[in-house]
Every structure is written in structure tokens, then in C-alpha cells.
Image (cartoon, rainbow, N blue to C red; front, side, top):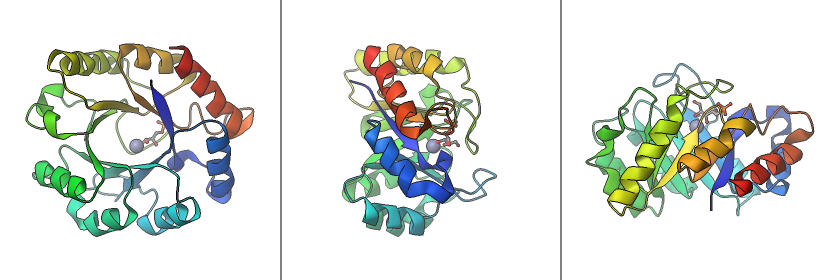
Length: 222
Ligand code: DX5
Ligand code: ZN
């Protein structure tokens, strides 16, 4: 059964707690935490002090951390302290992805690898058996509110096909540009987890709770 998370990058910073509570009431499975360092991507987002405060306030809130940073090892201790359910590193952000995956696993965090839209899926061949999930970027990373690239469906389907062919059990998470139109297409193509952001869960008429409920309905129908 597919599920969704919401990216707190798109929440209202002045109403963060309310947005989290509304999203939970709307049926969200967890929250997606975008960590940016202004170097791997030309933007900044949340920092670990903020995320730790959220975890303290909502200890049962599942978190997946998306590391868009140049040196993921720089944040290893913060990640271990936070202990999110999942954490993904970009394939090209370090030559030592394998080591990062092992360290996350040792810390009890399910490890993932993130791929940008221009990166062929085959680049994952040496790692695919080691990951809990592939975070498939459906837009260039760094900014919310972009529209999903149409190549995404083919990429999801190819990953799903690979998974079936080889009997693998990684999850496929789709991040960027998810909306009510493309959510069903992503699920039909084989996605397991969608990240809801600026086009579907936040800033919509009806508020965060209703928007999340709508996305949940759409996913459950697929
Ligand atoms: C983009 C981030 C995404 C993004 C999603 O770099 O990784 O998580 O904030 O937001 P939308 O859905 O608005 O693209
Ligand atoms: Zn993200």
C-alpha cells in the first residue's frame, strides 16, 4: 500500500506546529526533512536544531531526512542523535556512499540513495541491494514548487521493473512536484511513497488537513 509524507520545507514557518498537526490529522504517514547546505544545492532549508526540536515535541512523528549537502559525513553525529526512520544521501554528494549507508544502518536508520533527474538508474547497480529506498527526484533538487518532469513515470516504472525482476525489496520514494494529477500516475508506475509539497499539501485552498486528506484519497484509489 502506497503512502505519503509532507515536506516541512513547504510548511508555513510561522505556523509550523499547526501545519504538522493538521497534516497528521489529514492522514500523513510522516514528515520529509530537507537538509540543504547552500553548496550541493544553492539554497538553505531546515537545520538540525530545528528538526530536533520538532522530534522532541512530536516523538512519534516518523521522519525521513533528505540530505542535499556536499559532505554528508559532516552531519553524521546529528543524524545519529536525531535517529529518523530513514535518511537518504545523494549519489554524487560523496565518493563514499556505501560507507554512509553502512553507518546509517548501524545507527538504526534505514538508508536511502537519492538520484537527480539526469542521473541514469543504472548508476545504482552496485548499491541497490544495500538500500532501503531510492529517493527519486522528480525535479532538480533545491527548490519547492517546480513541476514534475514527465520522464519521472518511466523512471519509476523502470525501477519497479528492476525490483521485480531481481526480487529486491527497496522502496521507491518520489520527491518534487507531486500534485493530485500525477500522484495516481506515480503510484500506478510503482512508487511506494510520495512527498507532498507546495503543489498538493501546503498553500492549497481548504488548508493543510483537507489537502492531505485529498492526496490520501487519491493514493488509496490508485
Ligand atoms: C526539493 C526538495 C523537495 C521539495 C518538494 O529540493 O527535496 O522535498 O521541497 O517540494 P515540491 O513538492 O513543492 O516540489
Ligand atoms: Zn526532499
